Image (cartoon, rainbow, N blue to C red; front, side):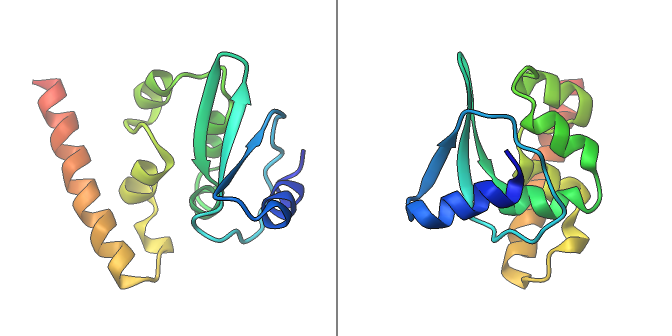
Amino acid sequence: MRLSEVVELYKKKEETFIEINEKIEFEDIPVDIGTRIILNKGERKRLIDLGILSLIYKKNRNFVQDYLDLDSSLDNIHEKYGVYTELEFLSICCQDLVSDLDLKAVLEKLKTYILSREKEADE
C-alpha cells in the first residue's frame, strides 16, 4: 500500500489512528505530524507517526525502511541507529528539518536525554 493511500484512508476514517496490515511503500510526500497508524504484522505491532517519518525520509530513507519493517524489533533498530522510535531519531539526526520553535525545544531536551541514556548504557 502506498503512503498516499494510507494518508487518504486516515483522513476518511477520521480516527485517532488506523491499523494497517500491509507493507507501506513510502513516498516523498508531506504528511502532517500526528498522522498515526498501527502497523500490524501478526505478533508484532508498531505505533508510527507518519508525519515524523516523512520528515526523516528527506534525510535518511534507510531508517524509514528499517522502522517500517516489522521483522526488525525495536532492539534491532536501537542497535543500528541508537534510538528506539522515530521521534528519538528526529531529535538526534533531523532537528534542522523542524521549523516550529516549541517542537525544536522539546526535541533538544529529548536529544539530551537520549545521549545521557546511551552514555550510561556504555558505562
